[in-house]
Length: 84
Picture 1 (cartoon, rainbow, N blue to C red):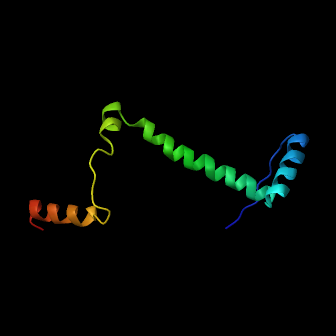
Picture 2 (cartoon, helix red, strand yellow):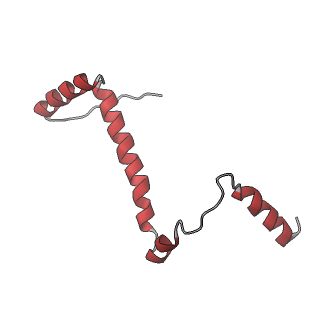
Picture 3 (tube, rainbow, N blue to C red):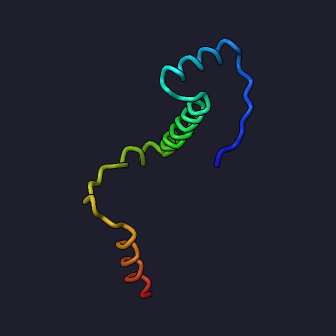
């Protein structure tokens, strides 16, 4: 679902952005949307930095099979532990 957004930007920047968008075969709206997506992705990636240094150091040291279904394994182990 699309929604309308009003922005206030310097006229020179708008003109330059329109030229760039035209060169790339995009609309100005598509460019702005792409930028917002990029910012959102970077924000999600930056939350990894909030981990403690010890956890960041340990992250990714265990290699598993590509087909590993951890949810099934977790369910089985919890069933064994709690007898469900």
